[in-house]
Amino acid sequence: MWLIFALLSAFFAALTAILAKVGIKGINSDLATAIRTIFILIIAWGIVFFRREISGLQGLTKTNIIFLALSGVATGLSWIFYFKALQIGNVSQVAPIDKLSVVFALILSMIFLHEVITWKIAVGTACLVIGAIIIIL
Image (cartoon, rainbow, N blue to C red; front, side, top):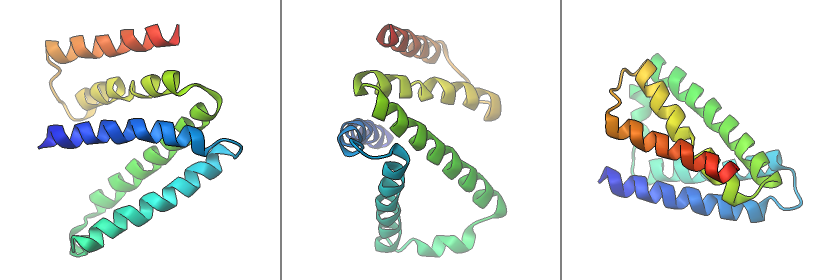
């Protein structure tokens, strides 16, 4: 099931790039990010209420809150830089470079989460980096 969700995530991330490139035309990219965030907020809380998961708030720990807050800050910064890059660059160049986040995630997961990086993961990651370099050049 995780694979289906991951593929849907990739599809909607691609759709995001196309829709955002059209949506930011003629406006400030930070304003565009703020407007987009309003819709994300409504959808996310709508899902929580619809699925009756609001009671999960009671189980939040201090650690949950701190790390979710830090994750939110990282997400916000990612979106701000992504929209700025989309505004001045081509989707065909910005989106693949943005996907280098996979490389950073693997490195950080190794350092902080002590995840094991197999040779297949290392080779796949190298292919991503090589692909991004080819696209940049």
